[in-house]
Length: 137
Image (cartoon, rainbow, N blue to C red; front, side, top):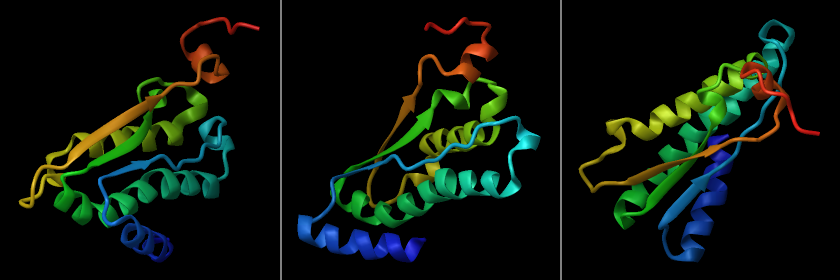
């Protein structure tokens, strides 16, 4: 996966004349009670949602540090809500938020602005169930 990222990133950066910001918003979700979801699907969620974020951050970090740019990563309210159908998805989004808050991304070349966007799908049955809400029609 990192080879394909590099093949897309380097020509784009050259064409644009540098990099001032990246919004990483790739992610997938397979819902279901933990044991009912195939193990392969759990692995896919971790690979795309967490490892994909790490791969992208690692690739763009040197250029963003040079430019004083920003790295925005998407999290999810599922990181905080204990919805049983969102186990692995929520865990990966919590890990993304943890990456955003950790100091090791601070490098001697400068301070990188890091941000996180939390997404919440209102009316999601699993979230409604977890909080005793009745979904609207």
